[in-house]
Image 1 (cartoon, one colour):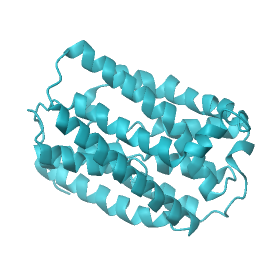
Image 2 (cartoon, helix red, strand yellow):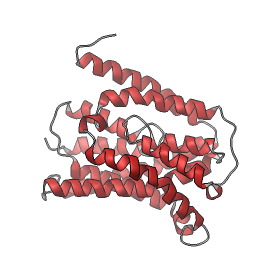
Image 3 (cartoon, one colour):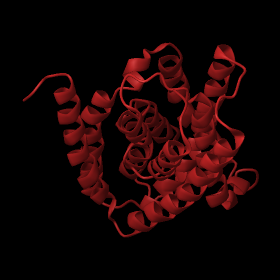
Image 4 (cartoon, one colour):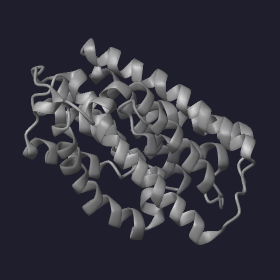
Length: 268
């Protein structure tokens, strides 16, 4: 089943918004795909998935271009921290992504079960005292902890940004600085995931099923929505409102679990 443009539009908006907000992009995309396409459908979304991720990656590069540029000069120490923070994703996330069962990473039920976990983490970190430390002052140990938080978020329902920002704030980073390190850390993570998706697509077929115009439009939508989402998140972090995203994740997760159990003929 190939996606129609309206389905690509919805997925692009969902991807662009939830890639950065601490609500789990993978969980929302899995749930939304099941809603708009129907569970059990044999969807061919490899090419559009790649383009949507490239769109959100471009959002980070544009939004944080000055921070990325500083990595090449006065902020070179941060490169080492990012390398250390990426190790857990490579050691844990990469094998799971490559050999893990598809039903695990694409399960709406698992996403529903883990979305409340994301919400509880956000509520937990919101009660902490705000740190004042800059991200380039992180210790190697703290960078590794944030990396493990990112590796856990390969599971649908666990927010990558939510887990890494929370880990950064628990390490004493100021909220905006925690977000900056989180999204700098996302550059190799999203880029690496894109490479894996391209490799997987090439192994299966050399034909692009989605019209090029749809791909370009989907990537552009994800890019624009991603920029808006980044600005929204930074604004709420500066106001100390990160816990408000928990009030979306927790009830949504419960609703998804009830929906999934009901479709399986199970009730509470």
